[in-house]
Image 1 (spheres, rainbow, N blue to C red):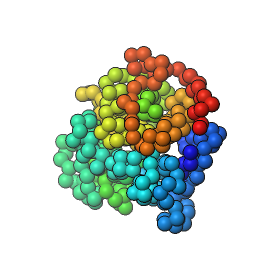
Image 2: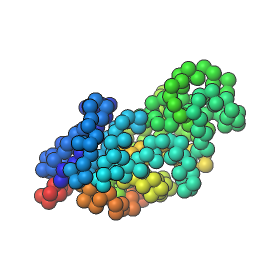
Image 3: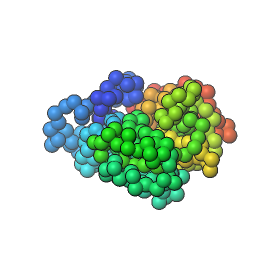
Image 4: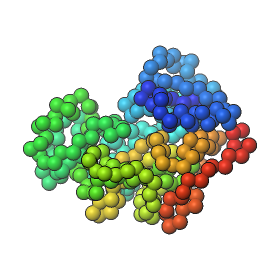
Length: 302
């Protein structure tokens, strides 16, 4: 197969997606890499129907890559993930509206175009988490403990564009990150960006049934195939605090091979036929398996 990967400069040297590209190449597939943030692109020559079996996006939220992916989709090319689905989660204000309407457990969300409008949020909503609506990788996330601390934060928020604000969900300082790849779910715990001093080592953890159900529902609600979900365990149960298309898949066993195989399967299926996500192979009672080498047959790279 011939694939096109859109890779932002931010991820130029990252294992994800470079290891996936290496795995696909080793299986005999042709992978073209386009760096939308560092290239002069002639659109009428770049996006041609039938030139690639699928396009794959690994870029920062505010970068130009999604525009290119949407152009490829408009030309009839399969995209991973679906371009409309990516738009639906990269705009966090839109993601909050879509998720809440479909019953996902999300915090109440305010959207605002200017940071000074934060002053209109009721005092009862504090402590408040404020972040850019197009943020990624923890960029620009702020915890505002009380209204009187808001004024000092306004200069840092200037120029961020659309913002969202959500009441802080009390938690232990640990996020659960659930990855979905190839219809399988894997969970890790890691330090919350709101609690930089918490002593948390990133590691694979058991996946509670309630969190697994929510993570599977996220893929259905937003139409994603490869994705990550950040969940905090609040006093009233799990709460979804972020959704990412094509995340790092850290701690997923044999991640490069699993993601590469998922990309091929989606390309062959035309981006459809998403399986219902289930815990990874070997899991019992939603407990993650130990690392097991992925068996790649001779036909897997064909």
